[in-house]
Image (tube, rainbow, N blue to C red; front, side, top):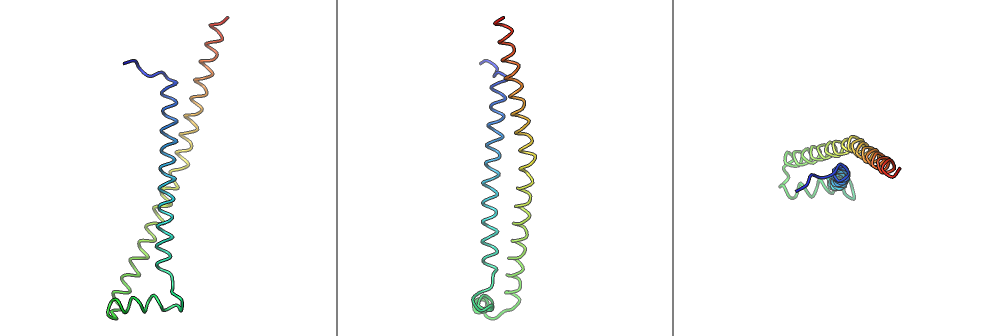
Length: 121
């Protein structure tokens, strides 16, 4: 099997980086929807006490269980926010790599074109 050409390698690199960016963007959307869901679940009810009252009924009026449940919801939301920030932090370095790969491909194409021109003369 022959070795892939520099052009094929460069194009494959750009495709891989674009696929990676798409994957991270999909992950970001998923994380943001999870955060919205967590925040919506943690919101107050119609009269401000509805959610607390429902939880009290479910937990047989044990305020410690309600407190722990609310604490866990807050922790999960904070962790989700951090995951979103970490995913967003990936985009800039990934974009830099992609631009570098595109620049490399452009240089490769220019060199190939100039080589062809020299061969025609």
